[in-house]
Image (cartoon, rainbow, N blue to C red):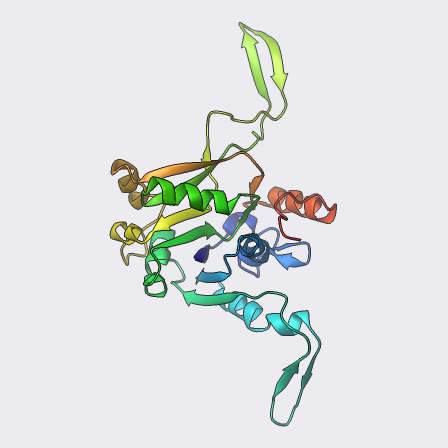
Length: 258
């Protein structure tokens, strides 16, 4: 099973945290958020990744090319430039890094990695900027049972606004951060049948969340896997601070690995 990670966006809303790296490389603790996402997938034995690169993609390439050297001691022979790395990589991952265009939108990026998925009837797909404790085994079982093209993980995050219940002009109750129990948002963590490529094309203006999703819904090919656990995107600096506080205090719910 492969997982495609969308990691090519501009990340303009989080530039106040780091304006010299792509958003998937913004760190939670000692590691970039893309590492946290991949650790979650690897926990469920999904260790073959296809990373869709775009904005500042060379920095993501450099991270993975030098990953073993950053994690271990090594000896370099300056005459012949041979490098010997001591120890083994902590991660048994296969990572394919694909330049899918500097300005391409998500639908185009997925289409441009099609050739790396030709042998796969089903693959997973997620964004490079959100973490959660989604049970990917249960999501996959759900997907294979219903037989549709796309499974979307639906989460019901806490509202950022206090909820007032009023009677006329009188407040009768207040809930500081209510859960939207009946309204789900897409948390990423998609599971796709390869027939999804019938809905995509090589058009850099094609957003996965636009025309392709609309047509898939119209054709009754989308099912939702309800996730009632933790999920949090890292869109703005407030999210960055929140996720780092959880990690640094040893209270990161998405850390499902040992």
